[in-house]
Length: 210
Image (tube, rainbow, N blue to C red; front, side, top):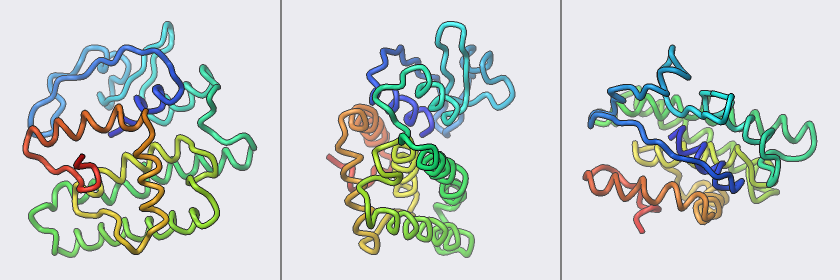
């Protein structure tokens, strides 16, 4: 998910890049670790990592910030200081408030009626309601299309796959999902992911079953 965030951002900015996919075992375990991942992110040993000349970075949010500084056009943060701060907060909340609920569901797929699973789904629903409110006066979460939309869109795909998808209770958010998902940069990243999942007999959200 986090690697996809960065790839979408790079494609939105038209940045030329070499994409190196890491090997992984079928149980969602990333083994063996790619040597560049270990070099750039030796403690967490997680993707994505970015190597750009003398700059080596890990963490998708930090890579977002670097891409915006290094390649400012087209901008993926709003212009005003306050607006940028709000957009950054939304991106952070997607990763640190919304997505932890989804992570809980990864280990509860055989117990979706359990109290922990119900609580995690409720947490996702509350976040959807909050984003629905934001979209009452705008097309995207922070006003213009931004990193915040990229982050939340990818998190929503995984939420849907794990049983905490959006419903008709948030029609503006459903329309937002379509707008973001129709962007060429998003399609270029998400469509191959979904084809791979389908080839493995794994969950593909209904809204991405093209």
